[in-house]
Each structure stands twice: as structure tokens, then as C-alpha cells.
Length: 383
Image 1 (tube, rainbow, N blue to C red):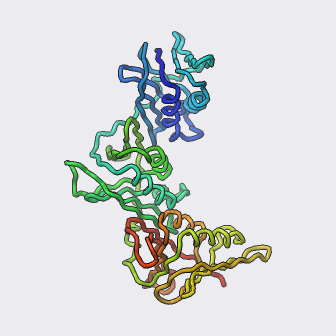
Image 2: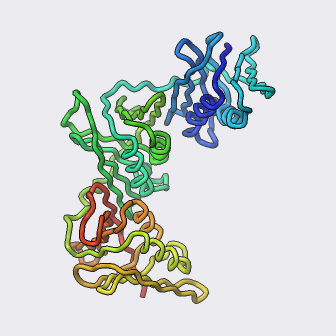
Image 3: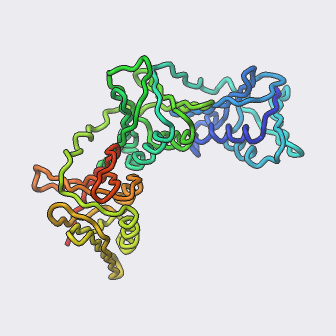
């Protein structure tokens, strides 16, 4: 096996395929990157039985072949090579020689025959705008749980209905929902399709494909090996879906009520960051939404206390409640609008706190597009 390839192109390709691999893999073979040199150029792939990444790049192939080499080591080397073409050759004993300018590296090969087959996706697919999909992931994925005790909550639920793709995530204390256009093409079906994708994998997809044109999303497999594939340009990422029933959190979103407050997003976020400095970890921040604006009050250890007020417009009665400051800040970062509407919902259960609904607002008196919604459960205040 022997080939020549552009340094920058090769480095970017290796970096892409190793991103999804876990830092520590229980099976050493899965730390490898599979490189196939053939008539189509170079195909690089990585797979850990849950997620895979594959890309094809141009290269001058003198002798075709396939090698498996430690992925992160190769990525580190490729990113630091001098500005010159890379040549990789494999000797008769399987040793891998990489040369670039005056730099020479000898790497050990891993047994190709022990590497698992990269998943192929042949199911129905559709297209979404790359920039909108990346934005939607950033607006939703942070609300997924980081606790593996309940695996279904560590994923983002993708739901296709007609010409719309919804992304939903929850960790029981909050729910984030974003909707974007979906183009199912000529084979579009009215039958709803859903997939529960690990949030970590989806976040990498968003970062990788954010600046492309369109992303093709395909659903494939059955039983315990259901997978989803994201493709754009010469790159493809697949992910094994999380098994289980995602909770029916959509029904928690209330019909829009007129009891709400509208506040400047940046001003509220800055004030929350300051006042929360004195709070004990995970303690709620006290908010009072009144006719004069919204005031924040925090008390912590060491007799520290902080208060601040921000201008706001209130429709309805004054409200005092406790909110997790970090959860609120994440929602304010996700609304991506100059103003934020915080709607106070009502519940039939008098003993249960009603959640607040956070949505974008283009101006003080004009609502946003409504494609993003964030539901946050208040905390009990002890005083």
C-alpha cells in the first residue's frame, strides 16, 4: 500500500473520524482508524459499535490497500506535520511509514480483520438545512440528561411529521423543543417517524455539518440495531439509536396564556450571572416579576447576599418564584432573540408548582416565530 495526500485535507479527515470515538475504549481495536486506498481516493472510517464516522478524500494512490492505525495518535501527528505532501507506505511486515518533508514516523498497524464492519444505511431519508439543524441542536441538546441511570433521557428525540422535523430533549426538570423544515422528497410519507439519538453524538453532528448546504438524514435498521445516518458532502456519521420510550413531554406545553413578562434577553442574563455568584450550588434564585420589572434576590453562605432589578413588561398579576439560575441562563442563550417572553402557566393541582414557558420575542410587544420553546420547572423557595 502506498499513497500521497495533501497534508491539510488528510489532517482534517482524520480529525473528523476520531471525534466521535470515546477517550477510553474498552476494546483497543476500536481506537483505530480504518484507511482504504483505492480508485476513489482515500476512505477513512472509525466505529465503536455505537457511532461511526466516514469520509472520502482525494489522494494519489500508487498501491491500493487497507490499514488500521491508532486514530488519536495519527490525528495528533497529522495536525503537527510541516507544510508538505504526506506519503504513507506499508512494508511487507505491516509497518506503516509516514513521511512529510523531513519528518518521518513509523507506526504499528492494527489487525484489519478484527475490525467491525462499518454500518450501511439504506432506509428512507430527507433533507434539512445544515445551518438550521445545527442551530436547533444547540438550542435543544443541552436540556438532555447527563445521568446514564435513565438512558432515554440522555438522548434527543427527532420526530418527522409531514414537512417538519422536531427536536425534543428533557432531563425531567426542563423540556426544550425546536422545529425546522423537513424535505422528504418524492418519497415523502405522512407516517410519523421518530429516532432517539444520543445527545453527545448529535452535538458533534451539529458542529461538523453546521456550514454545509443540506444534511441528508436517513433512518435504517430494525430491532436492537436501529441506526440513523447524517450525511453532507463527503462526510457521513451514523449512530445507534437509544432503545426505550421517550416520555410524552409535548403534552406538557400549555396553550399560550396572556400572563407573561417580556424582558431584554442580554440584560436578564447578565443580571442572573451576577446575582447567582453568592448562591450555594444548585440553590434556586428568587425572582419577582412585577409592574416595575423583574427583581432577583439571592442569599448564600458567609452571609453573602445580592439583589438586582431589570426592566420588564408584565401582563397579569405579580409573580414570585424560584428558578435554577443555570437552567434559566441556558434557555436565555437558546432563544437567540433580543427579547424573551416568560409565560406563567397554571395547573389544576394546587399543590404543584406550574412551569414557566420561555420563548423568543422579537420586540417588547411582538412575539417570535414560535419554533423554539423551553419549559422550566420552578423550585420551592424556603423563605
